[in-house]
Length: 276
Image 1 (cartoon, rainbow, N blue to C red):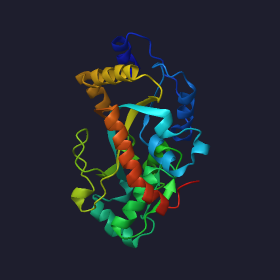
Image 2: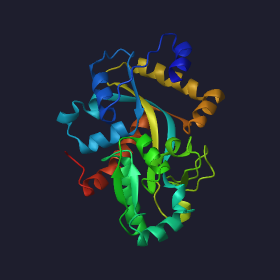
Image 3: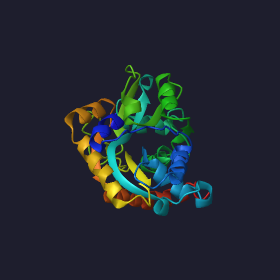
Image 4: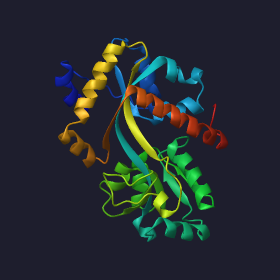
């Protein structure tokens, strides 16, 4: 969708090259090798920039976030939430906490993998609840969703799109881990309003480019993305897949990533996940 919208604004063809794997590290490594001429960009969730920077050495990454790349723009945001299987017959976060305190079978949650934000949010959640909620890692959000729908796990931490779309009533959201109710799904309460102070479960996606890309070229892409995201039709299409158009310029994107690295670093170290 973004490629189709960008083509007429930029006046050139826009090709999407998918490079999945290693939490975005493979795509970042590829971007580093491309010419710094304003023709190559990385579109990725925030997690690629935050957690590998904390947990993995520069030698292993084969890049440095601060010196090899430049932030261009944030484009969308979306919350992570806590979901339960409908078969668990739980209707609120407080009810879950009360039941899980005495039922080890409920005190576990699935996540999209180890070492990322969902595992760390689970650690924060355990502290807030006052008992350990055991982590069950899967290979991606799709697996978490499938296992929740099949009641193989009682609960899961997922992004909104995985937990709310095409679930056939088999998954129930108990709360989003953000400051305020999310405009795309305002019916879902926050953890905070239910008495649990977990507000750093917001995620986003953005564009980065090679650090040596000329400022004029970065500004062209930033302005083009701003135009795309201002279109009501684009905002509506994004809302249908449970993400919100949420533009921020490169400076703000860089500051947001720095703030999150600062927030998560001590928690990562406490969890024993750092400097592998």
